[in-house]
Length: 370
Image (tube, rainbow, N blue to C red):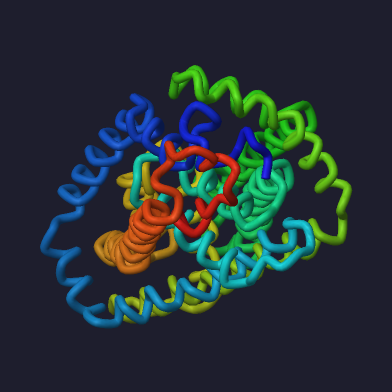
């Protein structure tokens, strides 16, 4: 393991995942986005009426547990897509699945600007023996492929259901939105080709502060080089992209079943369009934790264009919020429980982080965090 990234050497050597997440939680941008999200959420809920939404949720009942379980297949597919970007080795499938699960829980439930979960994912690989550059690059390229396949998924939905939107302003808004996402993704790709991770480190130092980020710069060039290497692995990129596209397609089942349980069943094509546009709206609101409020308003607008009652569309968004809690809270608990277990094991083994020679011992940080 790179000595600059050995978690057991303390904060002076390198910012640990918990340090990075604490920094994000203290950032003004995170809480500004949270405040905006809470205000939007309250406004949409008041606009549609609490009684109508509550009635829709009562119709779903215990079916919300089934909806939560329907999220597991796309989660596993996304994890397999990420796994294809990691160098061959003894890394177990359950490790990347658990990393994806916890990373998603962090991004969904904590105000970390959609960054904290990815930090933890990269650290998991590092502490399972993957080189720092390869771990960081796998996450960066994985995020790029997820957004790229999401754009394809949105265009796929439009190709199936253009008649549902007609030829007026709703269709124009969707096409323009997809074009903007494509331009942003192209810019993101160009930035990666020109040293994205080095740039990200510089920005993180300005946002989060602290001298610990200085040591991260030592490995930034390595990660940038690994990113370029990954983009040369066409077979791995294609396979990973196919897994992510499968995840988007399988995720349609969650919408289809939820609308059925909420009392307004739709055909599969309508569910495809709803899911593709809803996910596009959520991605565009990355600065707002969990797209709170933005998702709710977007669902109401998309539902209105597709003939779905506003109360039902808002109920669908809230059902998915329940799913985030049902899967995300256990993920956060598991993460924290692992941290406590690692701390308790470390004390009798090495006498604490400050014991002589503690920095030379193999790190168990991955077990502790994930």
